[in-house]
Length: 64
Ligand SMILES: [Zn+2]
Image 1 (tube, helix red, strand yellow):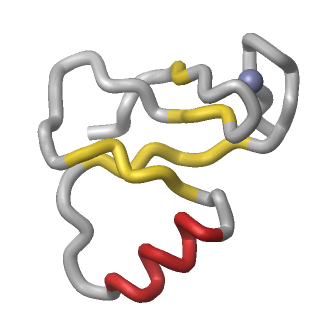
Image 2: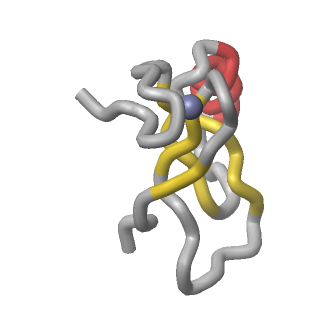
């Protein structure tokens, strides 16, 4: 189980980079469930992978 390295909470969301194609409803539902957070459409070279739902700290490395 992934935990926030800053506050230690385990309420973690995966940062979704890029534009959500296909099932927008499932995408929005996952945001509501705090399973993912939209990272935006601009993808850089050192984007984080996780965001803490508690303190909003971001860390990790985005998967290619
Ligand atoms: Zn945190």
